[in-house]
Image (cartoon, rainbow over the protein chains, first blue to last red):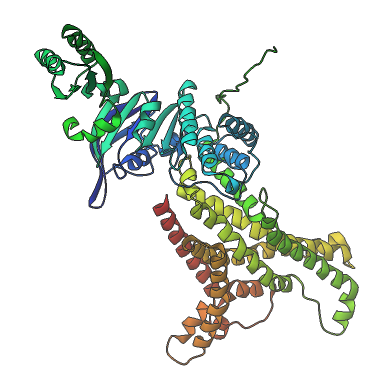
Amino acid sequence: MVDISGLTHDYGEVVALRDLDLQIPSGITGLVGANGAGKTTLLRLLLGLLHPTAGNISVLGHDPQTNPLDVRARIGYMPEVDCLPKDQTAADFVAYAAQLAGIPRREAKRRSSETLFLVGLEEERFRYLGDFSTGMQQRVKLAQAIVHDPDLVLLDEPASGLDPEGRVQMLRLIRRLGDFDIDVIVSSHVLTDIEQTCGWVVMLDGGDLLRNGPLEGFDELGTVVVEVIEHAEEVATALRSQGYETSVDGRRLVVGPGDHEIEKAVVTAAASTDAGLVRMVRGSSSLEDLFLAKDELS
Amino acid sequence: MTDQIIFDRGYRTYDGPRSGPSGARNAVFWEGLRRVLGLGRKARYKIFPWSLIAIAVIAAAVFVGLHWAIGDIAESVGEGIPSYGGLFDFYSAISLLFIAFAAPQLLIPDRTMGVLSVYFSRPLTVDGYLTSKVGAFATLIGAFYIVPQLVLHIGLSLISDDGFIPYLTDNLDILWKVPVTTLAFVALHGALVFTLAAVINRTGIAAAAFLGVLTAGSGIAMRVAEASFSGARWVSLLALDQHPRIIRDHLFEDTVDYPAEIAGFEVWMSVVVIAVLVLAGAAFVRQRYRRLA
């Protein structure tokens, strides 16, 4: 879906992206990084709105630098910033967004109603956007991004500014896009959002690519936190003998990092030492932990 | 217990025609017309533009009525009622207000409300966007000038002693003089107001700046041009509002002396000034929006 090689982009002396090589497959992809990591710059490069300082980009088989209009005709974009005309109704604006993608007026109006229904705004579609709450505005922004049946949707911080309930609804909508065979790239600095929605993760930090791969693959560096009734030291010894790094703090052990075989080894070690296993959880498998452990990653 | 069905329309794919960049430009053009006229907006957005349009059309009808009612009397006492050129003059104040309102409405809300990020994620270039906006502006302002003139032309034809068809055929030159004069007004005012609306983020302030540059600026230029320092006559050209009027008077053979004419400039200099303003304004606005895209 997206193929990038040797991509560098700078704003004068500030390097936003540095020598990126990555391929993003179809599906829902999370673009993760702190503010200033280069996420929005990457999205704007994919749209052909910025020209890279060096390197090549292919989006849906097109080069956005040489054929930006061909690329944009097949992409939907939900900006992070405000992008809604407050004096227009939701139905009018979304229909207009469809017409901007070249869809005839009558069909645009029909699709506007259908898309607003999909995002849960069928009752409010004739209200003016200036009267909408933040959550409703975010949903209109999503609707304008998908109204023209794009092959790929770029969502820049879609859950930004939403309350917990609104965030859950937005993430649910994004997951649904995958069911409609629309490829999605979601940019976010909220890692739990990415964990809940994406099958593939691209991790950026200060313009560098930290990681690019399926979400499951990120577990391999995770540790497991274990609590036993007794014999914690014996359990630790048994695990160390199998090659797992293990630390002990009272009745609590931290094992790993390692793959999913850790859990099996812990169960075996606890059984062989009569330790009495109380609790076992993946302690550092979240993206957040991995992001904090970026030095190890890089 | 009754059966319940959860109905979900899902998402419908679209396999129909897509008009690409030309469709995007058309959409921007029509949306520009709707925005200026307040269509699809709350009632308060319609009051100002439609009031001005109503005044313009009613004024043309009044002109025709005057020609019909007292035209002969006025002519017999040597006081002809103003015709096409005079109507342009009469409209200048109303049209300036309409221009000052329309151009900021076309450019500023898109920018201040962030809608540009949606435009330029679609198959639309900066040039396509600006061309459509200028097209919407020219259509609206052109219609604002031409429709009342058309009403006057048809009205005068209907009340003519020579008859409808003979009057029309005897005055065929109106069919090109009115559009050329309109073009001169639209080009000069458009270049100026688009340049201001490209950098000012409040519609009211942009409108006031436009009116201020035309009125106060012209007044100052005229005063300076009367001074005796070398090159003072060139300053007379900065009285911008005179240039379309000079062209209008040249075409309709009216005789009012404007500062540039007093300073010895021919009509072609006004054409050059308008052309320079249009080119400079276009280059500036284009550069500004390329940075914003």
